[in-house]
Length: 131
Length: 114
Image (cartoon, rainbow over all chains, first blue to last red; front, side, top):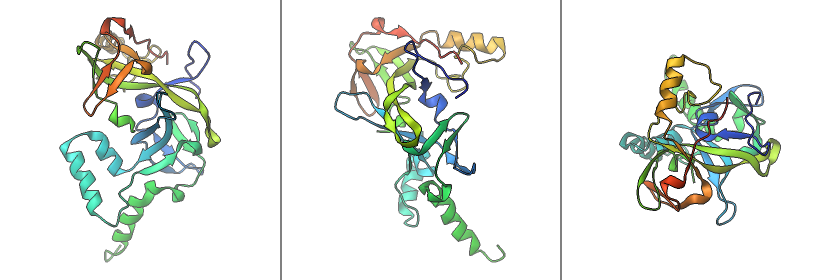
């Protein structure tokens, strides 16, 4: 990050909501691969502070984040659609190359679960006469 | 655990007094190495305050340029924000977060300069 902020010990400091959430994800070819809808935090050992382990993306994740009745309805609607995998699209933080204005990752978007909704919609659309 | 499970939670101090809501989660890059990214991000604490508007716009950050009147307004709105070190969290429930410390012991948030 060119606009890096360092703490008193010279370590890079960011804010999760401001610097990660809702950022565009771009794959190894620079193609848009969804947005960061939530972030997975894992506690490595009991009593330790959590660490960032994955980025979560997709409509179901965003619905969970909204904490509203409409969000819960969207989440349950997705669960009823057997054609869509109900588990969140998870991008391991280990494949992140750079955190900046966009989140750059080192894999192709075709390898990501985040594109499953788009692929599912594409299959439906191609069946519509004239498409 | 997801970040959204923490963001927006009501925070209460050791006496049950409301401190505010969780506006953001502060991270430092010194966690164990994660794949190609290298050193990972560890949670150091929470930004907690009464006013949430403007936090995601960055107007509370020192070096963010913008209309001076908005910067003044958001600086005033966030003047009561507190930084809660992760170690001060006592219990995390579905709708609120209880601290070990009293509100008076919490330090004001030092805005990130950018």
